[in-house]
Length: 120
Image 1: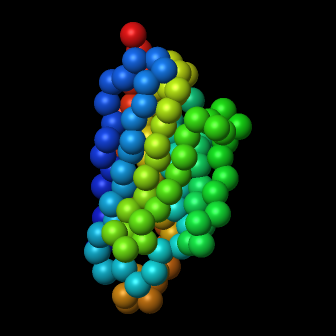
Image 2 (image 1 turned 90 degrees about the vertical axis):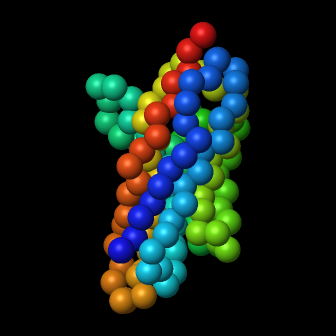
């Protein structure tokens, strides 16, 4: 069984920083692309940042230059460093990953989400 567990969310003032982590555990053979999404109240879930297995990255325009996605393949963990946070960054942040299990099946897995609130 595969699990994705996010951590690092919380309350931060505008202009502050947070670092989210997403640790993947279970019967994993290989992890492909990893992503961070977010969903604000009353809005659709949106892709925030994407990182390939080789480390290439892409970002939503709204976070470009402020957020950095990275991964530690040895730890099966993806990170999202968020700086210069704005109130509009307030949302539940989810990680997901495409991966192959030791049993040979491939699919996308999601974490449970972590709340980020940017407010003074």
